[in-house]
Length: 531
Image (cartoon, rainbow, N blue to C red; front, side):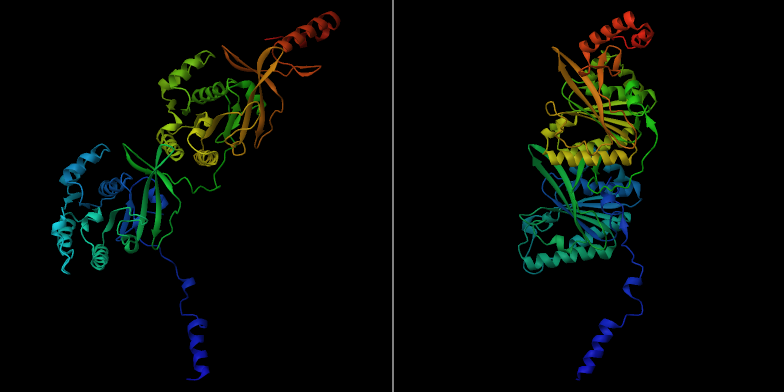
């Protein structure tokens, strides 16, 4: 053949475009089946691949069977898709009892022909590896179960038990492929659970290659605290989240929290709300915080951080809005009792349903689980304001960078929900430094500190930052009284701002001087008489 022939051949293949270029075709995403599991449909961009098998793998106790049974139950109850749950490990009676605590009534679904439970026991002695081993018997049984209720969803739990005694890799690979292809032919959306192997996603290390979608569940222990996480390892024909996502297993089933895929595209409000302290409102341009903003109140121990947060919660409830108070250091009863000493009755807001306390020790669970739990509390209670007091205690659970990442996600989540968030934090010593490095993330930062002079301790408050508004740059004396919190007008002496006894003494001296020498200034000074 001539050189010209090859040149023309290459030109036809690589240069001349086809009649309908791929770039101009309208790409169609694959059909998907919603799982009904909170958060899972979001990170899979719509659900599992419809009519295809999905592998759910992981170690013991990570929630494989629970995820599979919830997929079947939600399909039957929410999407009118009957399901077949074939188990090779637990008997139908045991499975029914195990998931009853989650509110799943499997017996009712079976009675209404929305669910078919089938326990298949496969003994090692029944497996023949003479070359005649196949899954025809399983296919017949499974097909009958599918046709009996018109099932659209199928679960096989777990696949290792199906091939427990099979050591011939050739037969194993062939039968695995045949099983997955048979499920596709039936057009059912299937979940197949598998146990994690040593260095592989599954024990055999084959299932993940023939599955269209692979979900890896993980249950890890870090610093004696357990955390469950989920990752979409592969998903043919679809985009999906690739990060690790924490998920909760509680009395309502599984909830996945896609907290690591947040974007800076949130709406903001120009509405202003009160801090709960009128004098402090004046320092914020006379109007208080922006609604939906994040506020940090930091200071050393005993400076009144919790009292400021309690005033903010009280003001929220007085507007007939809900407030969620997350207490990481004191119990709700302690906070309610202590706030009575400064004239706040928070219990009446609790009784009215406007204020809800959630109190727990940070060491109860990991940072991701704390964040996931908080998300769930917010979505259930639907508050307009949230207080977390104090965030400093979270350092005991994770590293500083982990705490910082968690707080960033928390702030972004609250902003996306239009919720005003107040955080309290303990300063390191007498400096303005905060270990959690959260000061740059918040919209407003209030600093409360101790001033020690002349043998007494007084409090001072000032605003470090407040985005989007004019604010006072004054250092104000901060009083905690039986009637609430108050800020004293700035009083300057020869050596600077005076507080406490020095302020009172200087004011008395100035009033006496004005009375004797400048009567016309008496009224003006009297208004500043010592409190």
